[in-house]
Amino acid sequence: MAEEQGLSFFEKYLTVWVAACIIIGVAIGRYISFVPETLGEFEYANVNIPIAILIWFMIYPAMAEIDFKSILGVKEKPRGLFVTWTSNWVIKPFVMYGLIYLFMKVIFSGFISTELQDQYIAGAVLLGAAPCTAMVFVWSYLSDGDPAYTLVQVSTNNIILLFAYVPLVTFLLGIGGITVPYDTLIMSVGLYVGVPLVVGSFSRVYLIDKKGEDWYNEVFLEKVGDLTIPGLLLTLILLFSFQGDIIVSNPEHILLIAIPLTIFTFTIFSIAYGMAYLWGIPHDVAAPAAEIGASNFFELAVAVAISVFGMASGAVLATVVGVLVEVPVMLTLVAIAKRTRKYF
Image (cartoon, rainbow, N blue to C red):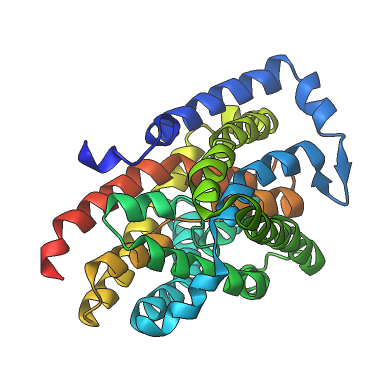
């Protein structure tokens, strides 16, 4: 398919790899249980060190791409930023909470225990409050988005995320009576967003000064980008080695979580894309704005879920199901964006 040309081999079949990781991870957890048990002991301040290293491998390449100097150009097309800010921070988290609460507490309540309902809601909220940072560059490319403006959208969203993520998550989970430690949330955001953001920004300034911008963009970013997918797959295998009991006991829960997450993705895309159309925003800005909201910063959501709820929790499973559905759903939305370009 033409829509898939910008995807690497691993990205193109990410859903297949995630499914394979489920099988491998569950098998390890049940038949080689000393592996997750041993790795689970390497922990400091509720942070599992092996998982933290793997998640940094996932997050750092995305942060190294961000050029904060690009933010100076926001005055040129302010409406595109207004769409992404509004959809991501005013609409998206609340739509996610509403949908996941409806499905877990009402529609699927007879199939899922109350404890797991709360954990799945928590994981979905962590996912829905984190707009995409890395894969959106792929979706933007595939839908012929403006790469420079996409960079501005992502950069500004990351700055907002540093300050808005913790209050939003705490508020939404508090509505449902789910208590989360505020300090652990702050530490997680600092550890998995703040630190990679600072290191990525420093890397960009230092290496461009030493090697030049072309080398940085064409050589360095390509090499560090190769860390992302292996880091993700190894993380998933380890996570599912801890998730074995939940999955073996309730394999249908993966589908039950995937249904509201899929509906959520189409809903947020439609809202943001519709806003952009009504405001006369060019398609090369409108498509990425909608795609940022529709996809999620699942690396952060997984990391925070582990820190707050533990690796064997239902919250982690919910965030990982988000990874499972991301590629096929987003490729469908990319196709929709390309076919509707003529209306902009």
